[in-house]
Length: 411
Ligand SMILES: [Zn+2]
Image (tube, rainbow, N blue to C red):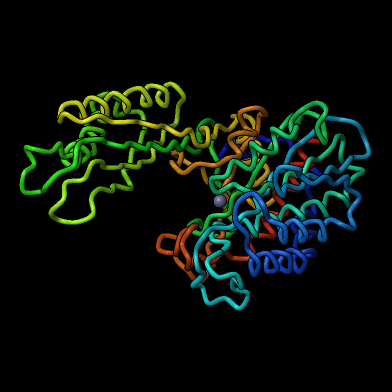
């Protein structure tokens, strides 16, 4: 990979020893991660999680603020010299699942689990703050640590931005760059992947109510059955996607919920569909919103029914700055080793609310491999599974990477 060999930073003395330092704080990193893992919380209000973060940061020279509209925490580390601001993000929320990993530190809260590894993100960022606090003389500028709730669908990052996170009057002024790491249970442990441009999709929710007229199931001609209309809509939406969007442009529409009726001999008044719509460019997203409306309304009309179509905008497309994603690759090669970095050939169609930050600040989201070494990454339970496991050793790499990203941005 020649693009890594010509970089001037390979011998950057400021990056030397980061991995060793991350190893030295690993007992703290693991302890915090397990504390969070035992006590997972959902959504925007994470009181126990916030307390754990505040406890862990308490002895560091940081300016700490807590959110008003949600359980967010921001902490600012001032370098010894003036300079730009770099934002580092960790999301903090869990998922509504009952854990089935059998781990010794398994979730103690029934029906809630850190199944996306956000507990590891918090622990890694807190330990990176510790490493950076020990290296303030090397920092020209300030580090803004963003601990956000509500990543799993609750727009936590947007809440923080609405509270002024990125404003000149915000906790650290408007950041000049922004980075986030996300652990993945299906990538080899300690590896890093990112890409320039779109890396994750927009995720909008489509809700359609088809209205007909109920009646006796033996006399459909006397009623107006919404069920065939809804069924036709499922097919028509898929056909529209392949006929109206170029095959070179990724887009997914999955009707994941369909509901109608109560029993076999009654035609219901209404049928209901719910779908997720994923795209990687804004023009395609806008175009598909129009098309989806038309297809649903006209398909309903073809059956004598009507359709109310509601599109709820979800997270924006996550777009990495090309230079920032290249820096992630270069730093990972330097700090972890060139064999730990591989190009991410295509985006994934999951979504991320770090997109709200990257819409305003150039930066990058990167994935950190966390598949335990005794498991095969191709067959391991993925993120969001109630059996997912993450290799805690990968947190050493994540701590070193977060610290390296800040040291590099504040050179
Ligand atoms: Zn996640």
